[in-house]
Image (cartoon, rainbow, N blue to C red; front, side, top):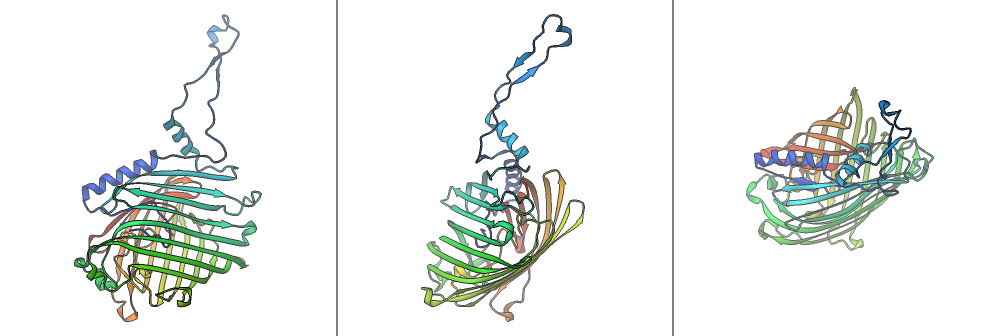
Length: 420
């Protein structure tokens, strides 16, 4: 359901009833466009102005003064509409921050309310060519006790010589567990109700060594605790409390025009993480990750985006640290965590099309799977879907995606920024 490890998102809906899907889709699109609250860090909304109406030409003989009229004060909803009309325009604020949110429904979290705040800023305000730094604060609560709170961002230092990337969150989630491996996940009879608490913190500091090439260290901490488990036999001998401390290094090549909504360029990365036993890890292992994304303009308003990713664990990772297929960024449409194992490969191709002003749409196809070793990589899981885009702020899109997978699996996602 929630792809907390790689990106944040406001809510994920797994709604199986066809009629309810249509209602939720229409409801969330309307909420995205009309419901929300926005706050300006530096100033409040502009105060009402005094309008001066000149006298009618027929009345010039009877009056030589202008008639002053004070219009009615705008209500809250009109102010919100006025703000969003200009939210994506460039401005000179030191910190341009806004909040948007709305209700959601899923078969697991039931009725909930999610909020996400997006902020843009520049350390060197005189450099208007370099892309701005970004920060996002996100939260969610629901009627079944689900909650989420986190922060994520990319800080670009002057002349883009250094980059500080961070992602931290905590959540409690009523979920499901099918076991480890493709065969276990593909068996509907293995579904086990699971409620657990999880927290993660990751930070990396990148140094530019040559143009568009960055190298730097990273630190990571993971914690997961099972709170409720309906079928312990399916869970097996997996630990109910998992703690992992780790460190590593990352190398990336990035010449994208903007990280939040790329229009052209290439992004490639290679990450090596270590979680050794001498760092108080009961389940010691290492993780190698790679990714490659490219973006090309194909016609007016059309962007073709492609991504290939891989994640490989070596050693003894516990259930919570294994590679999980699905989420808001790749293999959209699958319940995240239904298919989990040591390793994972995914790929996706997405067409992004601007339709009218700030409104756009996407369609995508993808494939991938989890596996224990090369001998077990025998099946390919398909993925496809479509989505709606609205430019909330400059190069910051609100996205609503509806993804489909194998065996009738589907997922509705409400998020901010592109999937990759």
